[in-house]
Image (cartoon, rainbow, N blue to C red; front, side, top):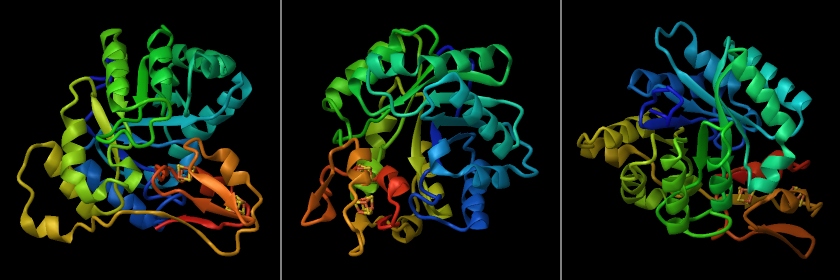
Length: 311
Ligand code: SF4
Ligand code: SF4
């Protein structure tokens, strides 16, 4: 149960970023088939965002499915008008009459939430009108969790949490865990993201998934999956089933990494966009510090030259 929202979710949430154009970029039918496989394996919870551009995959995966599925999405909108457009786009593109969970994307603190208050008011009205069931924020910051925990309008918080703390902007794993505990005590529904560090922790997947699975305050954990084998592996893991050796051997657990093509002219847009401080200009070209990169793919979305890929 996601806090006091009344929304019941599977502990494993399908993270839809991975199948889409910011990461693996599967064909529509392929990506939809992976999501459908997850839904048929017992997952009832999909996490996406307007930025991920994966609404078409989800809509396709839900065609003819006789199952209630919880969808969470997010928008960077900060005005009421902007959030209204984001909400309408989600409803239209997903073919739904309501969105279960609508979050402000990537909030850092009380200050940034205040700067988005027009968007919050829009979501509060949408909730009253039955167009949204629960609202809140996603955040990579300890301060974001702490701030959202104290805001009565918010039902849900989606924090970044993983075994090494990679990607947390303003602290480490233990500080984030403490903030999550405080928020849970205040009745917020919490589901984690980046359990595998966006792909950085794939070579120790068992340990990394085991860590998030053991956090009692997390009603669910969104894990990016791009193949039916990964779905089977994660579903078995989250239901404490033994993972067959053959499946373990077949799941490709190669670490992912971000690459920047040689033709980058050094416009700097990606550097401004990266909240992790993982990009810099060196001799007129963008260069990534892999140790800081959480493989969110957000820099790729702003690159006018299509130089950035996660492979
Ligand atoms: S370099 Fe790109 S993918 Fe890596 S953390 Fe920054 S924005 Fe995200
Ligand atoms: S946004 Fe693209 S073109 Fe601009 S610096 Fe970054 S990688 Fe290079």
